Length: 431
Image 1 (cartoon, rainbow, N blue to C red):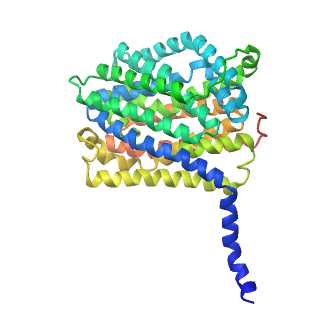
Image 2: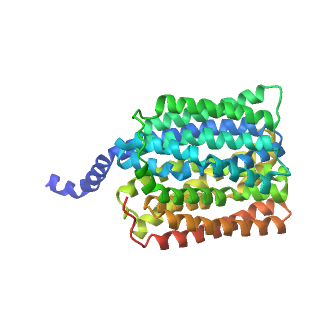
Image 3: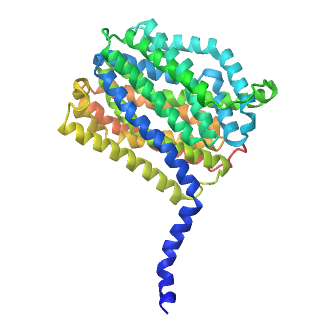
């Protein structure tokens, strides 16, 4: 009788045990991946503290904005063929050598377009505030040094080698942090000198990544394979450029409208917001891989709303904790950051809403809906430009401006959710 009466009580625990056992590999992979995100978070914070307190606020604003532009422009490299390389690593890893050769070929062909686009962005947004040599050096570091490092990370994650990707992520972020510390200890602290240190740190990361972490396969050119995937890759490249345009356009507008000092304060706030996204991106990356294999994974409303609620809660709590620390210890992250410390808590809703927009864009990529993703991101970029231009030109008080960002990002999230989930009603594209 005792055994019979205990059975119903034990069933829930048995189910939990079975659930965990069946997903032990997934949990292990996530812990491996999140360890890289945790290590990267530590070194990213060290990098941020050293750099933000060595450059003046105005020069930090110049660098942060030029870096954001470089990240956006780097998506032109190889016309987005990185997406094909990632899908190959995830689904058909034996073809990595063939698609790596395609990436190198298309990367070389894309250089004139990358150079022309970079100069156009410089003339529009940076000509009156940032020297051309500084801008060119930062874009070179982001597009031709750091972007290939991301390729190595992407391929390792696609292969399921999350531990190797985690180690590489930590070490390369540590290189950047070391570069910032060496710059802090140097005798000259201009943004031009920092751009040279930045090139050095990214070059060291590139050598390490391809020397020790890229899978060894013979490079074989098969142009017919590349041509079949080129249209989709161009859609992805366009979507990535638009994604980073809508993600980083605020920095460009603040620099163009508010000047370098306001851009520096804004960049400090948004850099702290960015730090909350590091663990969220790890989760999104693994979810994307699952959806490539099972496109209907998010077919139930409860699952979708649960994931979005978790992303928002984790992001908001992270910034709230940081805001509390800076409220009581405003100099905790250095004297320059202290000027922006009182404003951090005012952007309380921005991290969660921003991370959700990024997460929703990844859902469409996972389902192969790259053209719709590009269109959606273009619409969001336009909406963000309109909203931010209105805010920057009508609100002069900096605290009120930062507070208004919560409304801006709420409107962007609502637009993104409408566009994304409407598109997901259509059948996923076969991969």
